[in-house]
Image 1 (cartoon, helix red, strand yellow):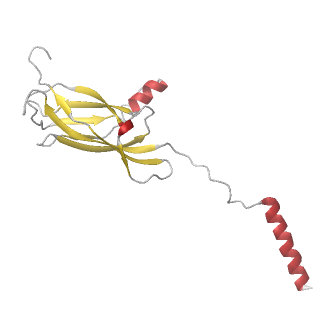
Image 2: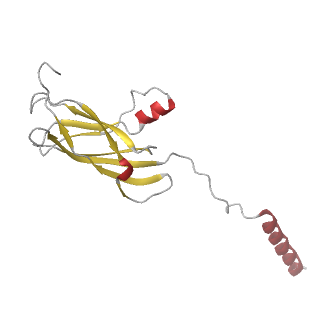
Image 3: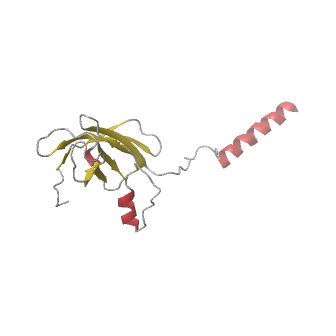
Length: 163
């Protein structure tokens, strides 16, 4: 009797598995936002003589400005993004993780923060386009890797009375 019972039980379980399927065979839903590490690096020089400039602050707002304009929402003043200050060679290098930017373009602000130490330079905003950036790192789930862009910046000195 026990052999017959085990056979019937095995057949019953097999039929149930075929009819109901396996619960873990379906793909899992993932929640999140596609994101990447945006790495911006380069050198800041004086436009007149190509000498490196120390003490210049370079940063960006990730895609937040473009997304805020696209969705017509106001910027959150508490959202802070990464920045770097140029060294004695005029070089900077920083990385910010951000949601993927639809058009690949990020506004970068360039600001002279050291006062009159090395002369006064005009603040400016440039657009950095990450569409052709060098991609590195492994992709995993929503993370698409590190996008590195080299941007050299030329600044002009402020002229008294005009700025």
